Length: 112
Image (cartoon, rainbow, N blue to C red; front, top):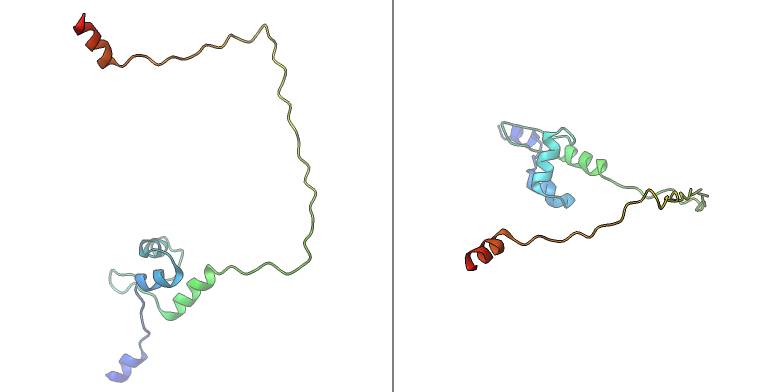
């Protein structure tokens, strides 16, 4: 019986994975629920084997770009000019004014 137990893989909790990759436990569970990361689900809980954990780390690994000489790119920028407005078509601007609060209006009516 002890030999069988030694053959079973160690299972990690979502909190262990979250701490190792610097994310929240909720994030790890959500990614597993959506099928974005590999997991094992014995019963109702998410668990992760060492191989799955290594795969998760590889999935989110960022490698540096090739150390090639930097290339300069020429980017054309279009400058859009606003159309000239016809002064006859433009309306005069009106300034907005805040109305007096209803409580203040009611208080003035009661005082009068």
